[in-house]
Image: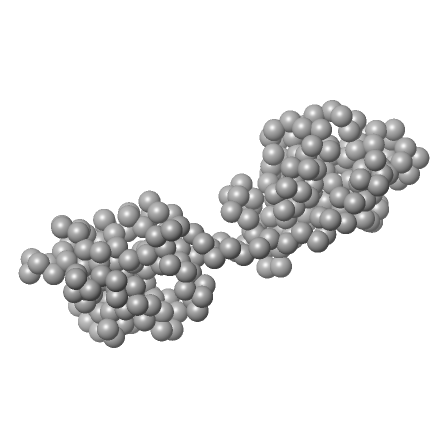
Length: 284
């Protein structure tokens, strides 16, 4: 068992998440701007609001050029839709009576409720009507998806905290310590290793009161102290034993518990089933 334990934390330290340049089959990845784009061709009676909610349903944003020369990608996207004679597109800036994030050629004419369009040949932004024009010139739009790189996983249950540069996930499925450790490993992380008081406070806000959450430390042998999954002693990290617990406990595996005041380290039987917390370290 001790050999398995050390193999586990050595392997965990080498795990990296491969960046996959894919979002959806109908989106195009453009490396220069590290984002995914999709052109929506004109539709009858389409409005700016229709465009906005179409992108929202695709978990994307209505495009507007927020980087230098990003507007140029639209011309490339429209090459496959020449039959629509696209000249302008709706962009994701909606005037609410205040100045927009980008300079507009007719900004002095701003009135509440107007929208913004972009000339695809020049990138010029201008105030326009939020509905399609009566002259029959229907407007296209582009949806943009930017990958959230805070947590190197597409699992949205992981929450990033800049204070620790870690992502945490609460797993309410009851598991043994080894089952929970395997689950975290398969997700690209490890059972949480609490290293500082600040980290303990963050975890306290995520945990429900009085429940044990399996954590990334255990004994190697029955007469050893507790070691974390990163290979360090528990005592060199965060250690606050509950009641009379301590290094001499007979139970081999580790957990943490929130009693409203502190996060405590609590030893548990490795075969007992509890909730758990996974962490993924990041470089952000």
